[in-house]
Length: 201
Length: 220
Image (tube, rainbow over all chains, first blue to last red; front, side):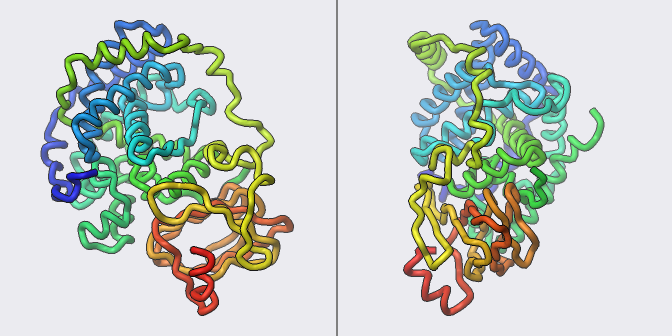
C-alpha cells in the first residue's frame, strides 16, 4: 500500500478503458479453463498462465504492492488456479471473474495475514447453475462495454474500490464527498453494469 | 429460510473488490452463505472485477515464473483428488454457524466465552484485522441494545432469534446494512436469545448519556 497516497484518485481511468477487447476472447478463455478443469492438461494450463499471469500481476501492482510481492502473489494465484480448477464452474463465472477472486484473496491474505472470508468455500458446484457454459463470458464482455459508458464520477468510485482497495469511507475522505454520496454513486454504477444480466442473451 | 433484509448494492461491490474491513467482509460472507439471492448478486459484482482485470495492461512477469509454478506443482505431495474434494460436505447441516464464521468460533455457539455488558446483553470480540468493530452479540428476549448511530457503515446479521428496530423485524439470515444516516435501537422480540454478528468500519456513537458512559468500558 506504500505508494497509494501519491496517486490521484482514478488517475488511470482513461488508460484502463481505452484498451480494446476482442469480444470472442473472453469466451475462449472460459472454455479453456473449463477444459483444463476437466482434463488437467498441462498444455491448457500453460496457455491460461501466459494469458492471465501478466493480468493478475498488473492487478496486484494496482493494489499498491511492490513488484517483487506482486510477482510472488501472482505465482501463488496461478498455483491456486491449478489446485482449485476442479471447483471452477463456467456456468457461474467467466474465467477472468474466477481468477480475479483468487488474486484478490491471495493479495488480501498477504496484506492482512488473515484469510479473506469467502462465501462458498469449496462448493462452487453446489446450487443452481446460472446458464450455459460461456454465457457468463458473453455477459462479462457486455459489462466491460457498459463500463465505458459510465459517467466519470461513477467510474472513479468503481476504480478506487477495485484497483486501490479503498473502503467507502476512504473514498469519501479522499474525494471530499459524504459517505452516502459514495454509496449512491457505487449503486448507480453497479446497477448500470449489472443491467446486462437482466436482458436476454 | 426466508430472508427479507438483504445486502446493499454498494456493500456487495466493496466485498467483491476486497475493499472493506475484515470484520465487514466476514459479516457479508456469512449473509452470502445464507442467502442465494445475494450470492448471485455477489457473483455479478465479482464479474465487474474480472472484467476490470482484463482491461489492465499486462505487467511483465519473470522469465522463470512459469517454470517456478510448474516446479511448485510437481513438488506438491499429492495429486489433486478431484472427486474426493468435490463430494466433501462443506459443513454439518444442523449447525447454526455459517461456514465463513466457523474459521473463528468453530461449529457451535455453545463454546463461546461471552462477556457481559449489562444483564442479558453479552458480547464476544472476533480477532479480525484491519480496523472497526467485529463481534458477536447475544441479547436476551425483551432486552435492547443501546441506541446508537455510526460514524460509518454498520452490518448486523441475525444468526439466531430475532429483533425489531426502527426499520423493521430481523430474523435469522436477515442483515441490517446501515450507514451514518440511521439511529436505531434493536429490541429482541424472539423467545430465545438473539445472536447477531456485527461489524462496523468505525466505532459506534452512542446517543444517550448511559451509552456514552458505557462506551469506554465496553469498547463499543
